[in-house]
Image (cartoon, rainbow over all chains, first blue to last red; front, side, top):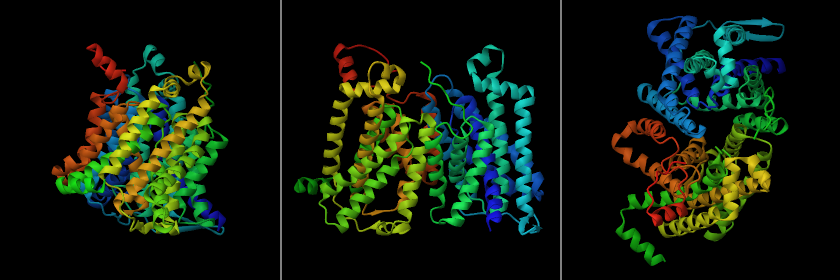
Length: 291
Length: 298
């Protein structure tokens, strides 16, 4: 029972982590809570659904195509709604702009697809493997494997490649990076693209796993993922991973051992508790106040 | 006063009356949030949580405990203020977006609590709340709150609030007790949130936990930021625009929210600091008095 729940928690948590990574990367560079991120995740889930059911893509191909689509969407959103504001407004104005985009995108999808819940056709065999007393479904293995692969890939990119180095520089100091000749706008676009691609992968997998896709699914998922990013210490990539996984585990455990009607409250309650003990989040660095 | 109210209901179209009452309630709610976020600079994204505490507390008190309207309103506001005080305490340690997350989490917990709260009718909601709120009461209270807010922001304490927003360290080093004032701002702001909630529940007849979700908090935050952070006329203007916009956009029917979202983005691109960013009533008076021509950018 316990191990089963732990596994479910890890599965849910790794999807939270994938979304949380997008929040944390964008935040690390431009200090913006990108509220439209949950909607990008929702668009990813829908893109996958359309490709699978109308164009007969298999799951992996659909996921890759959805990731590509959301990359473009993320870049577009940044170009239209955030870039014109950068540098000449307070962070809160950018936040409102992000909320505007979020309302726009979810309504757009509701108009196009209707507000009903859509289901994925059967794209993956209902097969399960036994590992001792543990039941592992094929989809769970896929989610865990894909998430792990994407996170390792991201970590490699950020730490070892040239663009990753530019991203790290920008997250330390945007102006100084600009003076060092880094094309800051391109780095920001790239960050949005990568974050959106991860969210799209999460969206497709959640859509298949829970077999439900609807236009307002981005809202709660986005909030939870943001909570995960904050819990891990916003701006920190390993923090978002750990935050996402622990939030997923706590939520599933809370439902299993406490009460299912308080599901959402448990996740947020734990988050508040963590922040009261460690105000900078689990992996966040303590920021010393400067004059 | 009842005669006056009867006259108003007779001469004003019920649809416009309703919008005007909701506008009054929104102004009270937004002024509360303005005190926390606009003036003191503590980003709160859970104002609807305080609103729901006020709404439920006052509704239950007047329905089941026979409280008078005014007492129920004040009690609801006081309970909300108490929770605001509790939330104010972690602000001592949390900064910026961490605080925002705590306020979101708090409002979500409150919502889930009311979804499971037996006397509040659980997810079905609470109906049959006596409809005491009318045009006169709402606008009397709203004008009183506007007047009090203007006085407060002009006072020594009000300037201290602004100082905390501009630079907390500088404020502390000039001898401002930032801790006490931040908690005070939270308490006062959530008092107004609770008051607005009480007015709302006694107007709507029926309330449901979903009325006070994250979107409601965001709507209130939009009113404060859109009009101009920390400005009372700005907050009133923001409430006016965002209360009216959904009604005006009814022409475009199902595309309403699409336009609403686009409107927010466009307004922010063209007026990044809010429409009346940091315009204060007494500044305006001075400016008009001197016939000075000056743009109102902060």
